[in-house]
Amino acid sequence: MKMNANQDVDVDVTVVGAGPVGLVLAAELALSGVTVQVFERRAEPNEAMKAGSINVPTAEALDRRGLLPAAEQVQREMLERVGSFARTADDDQPPGGGRRAPDTRFTGHFAGMVLDADLTDWSDPDLAAHTAVAGARMVPQRELEELLAGHVARLGVPVRRGVEVTALEDTGDGVLVGTTAGTVRTRWLVGCDGGRSTVRRLAGIDFPGTDPELTGHLAVADIADPEKLANGWAWSTRGAYRYGPQPGRVVTVEFDDTPADLPHARLRSRGGTPVAPVTLEELQTSLRRVSGTDITLTALRGAATRWSDNARQAATYRSGRVLLAGDAAHVHSPFGGQGLNLGVGDAMNLGWKLGAVVAGWAPEGLLDTYDAERRPLGAWVLDWTRAQIGVMRGDAKSAALREVVGDLLSTREGTTYAVKKISGVTQRIDLPGDHALVGRFAPDLWLKDGSRLVDHGHGGGFLLLDRTPDGAFARLAAAWAGRVSSVTDDHATPTGVLVRPDGVVAWASDTTGIAAVTGLEDALHRWTGAPSAPAKRETRGSTPRS
Image 1 (tube, rainbow, N blue to C red):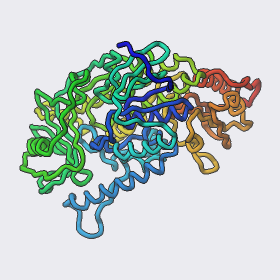
Image 2 (cartoon, rainbow, N blue to C red):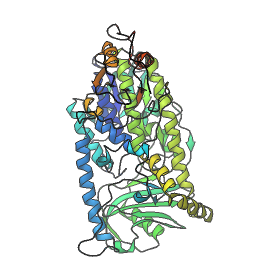
Image 3 (cartoon, helix red, strand yellow):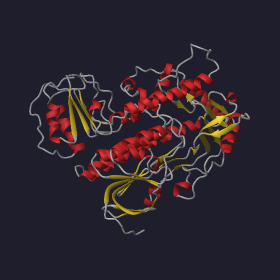
Image 4 (cartoon, helix red, strand yellow):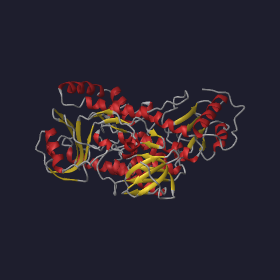
């Protein structure tokens, strides 16, 4: 479709979608110094209940931007609600004192089998290296979106609500975007507009995957007779349901031959009429079927959500000057709580790279690493959720498989394995370098003054930890001033760590000699472009040691 821009004002990046993924991306771009705007078709924020928590990389992303205290406050409020539910729903607890407090050691579940915090080996090195954000994991998506909206507003990013994208044209040097508010010109366009992404469809990007076989519901409701429901997950030949951990929160899962027409369904991914909202009657009927009771719901608190196990991944995350992130790039069932976190990871990875390309200090080829780094993780998440569907069906074979998996998850090794996967602490990107930290999210790195490395990077950019006796690493990185911030500390191992803006370790060393300096210089050139001043490479140094 040919369009003519009717405005003279250009913007570097236009983000479509003001959910958590779009807001994180917009914030990262703003921190990079580029001009960015957000279009959102909804006139008001989405009040539907979705994800109930975040994983470690997402919590650490908030921490890196100075948002940890706000997230911790959300968790405290969440625990109050959970505690209220536990006091009314747990018939096994004695009255008065002696009631159990909500467990803050967040573990999650696999296919509805809640992972026991007491069985988890919290001393495991992967888990022990990421404890600083333990008080900010139970952050529901709605509250996260509110937190991020405030962050974006403080950065001065305009969010234009009630604006829907209707057409786009990649002109090679930019994108013309047709909207319900007129045509705008932008250098880059990023679709963060969900599973039925209009941007993906208009860009002609295929969305292959597997078709749905279940219909799920998620809502908070007023229940006349909650004592008829089991607390936690329960299975039957008709499906499964969960009651809790908040008052009135219910989840239903029904396997059938004709899953409901959902936002993530194949036909809907190509556009079409809006999906009908979930009604009180629909939710009650579903809950009665899977619970085998005559439970009565009297009201919905906010909008309910209908979902499926449709699992798809975009054929490419980039087509010219159009990119995708979040559900626009991949959809799957919500089991294991991976979707929101996967999208936030996309936004953190893409934000600094696109910002660097727009700023001109990185070649456009840097954007190729976005698809290369994020696609394998997206494919893993799709399979992780598919595996859970395999043990949740109501047939005898799945029930038998669930018994086997349940036995494995009742062991210390099995529980710890699953907790590590769900929490995200084992995520790794294939990057050059042989140090164990390279490609991993940076661990909690405490400094002698009591601060952490992350405390020094709230404004974005690369962070370099220098623990050499003579500051050799920091002197070298000074040539990249403005892109790399150096923090010196007393000598310890690792002696040096270079952390990308998305929290991924780009280089690390346990030594202080010439080989370490050369490795750092290579990483700086690879990830932060040409130096803004001549690099002061060390010609001598202390003897490398382990």
